[in-house]
Amino acid sequence: MFARHILHFPLSFEDDTAGVCPAQWACVGHVQTCTLGLRDCDAPTLSSGLGAQYLSVGGNNSMGVATSMSFRLALGAHSATFKHSGHIKAPRVSFAVRRQHDGHVFCTTTLNSSAAHFKEASCEGLAAHASEVVYIQLQAMRQDGGSGRVLFDDIRIKDGAGQTILYAERPVAAVEHL
Ligand SMILES: [Ca+2]
Image (cartoon, rainbow, N blue to C red; front, side):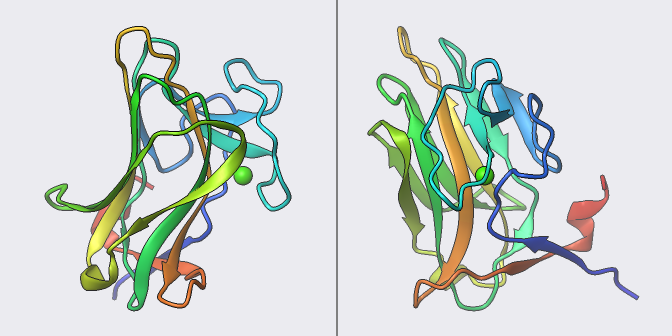
């Protein structure tokens, strides 16, 4: 008998503990679940649908890498979308969907703009990879003099019609640490 574990989308960070790495993510460097008023969380404009919490990756002169739990791309998965905000000047910031067993990049989006409000961006090209086990990785790499904090929220997997796929199966081997 196989246990079934389900990941629910969108990933909104609303149930995570502010100030630390979100549950079931792996964090390196400066990464924390944020809420308004918390130290180093900036003061972004939170539009409706974003809730009260979001993820901060990177910081002043420090890098950050956030790696999600693994999940299986559903049949029909077409793209990943997410909202981002913050200061993106010198640092290199990217959102990627990667294959679980070898890290192969299925899609990557480099962010090169900044805003006080959350803007949507997408990572395209997942249609050929349905049923693969993947993870999402958010990276803010330090560069000299850069202030690299980037805020993420509302991560979704969408089908070809732009509809959010609400559930993803989590393979048993990927949930041993639960
Ligand atoms: Ca949120």
